[in-house]
Length: 106
Image (cartoon, rainbow, N blue to C red):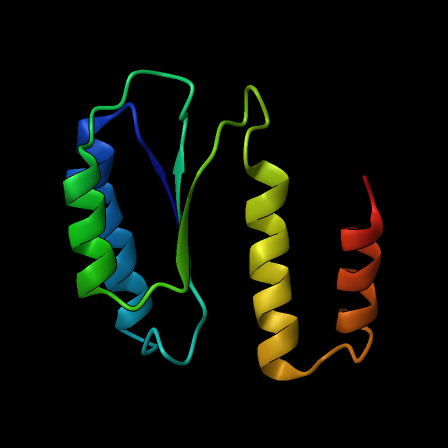
């Protein structure tokens, strides 16, 4: 679930609306949802305490601040959600091998 860190109304209005659309049909324990704050390269209009509050209240699997402009944390957030899903569902038995290869890279 993506929201714009530089737009106050995106956090106040759109994020709760999107979250409600999901939770009307699923429990967050059943559906892995990663919270992503985008446009981390711009001035933040959302305080970290507010983000921490929603993270404590809802059952997101994690949180990343990313910038699609600078690509900061974009790959890491994608890897996180894919690894989470694969590990939880045991979809791909080669997950451990992939992680070993990653750790071996300099």
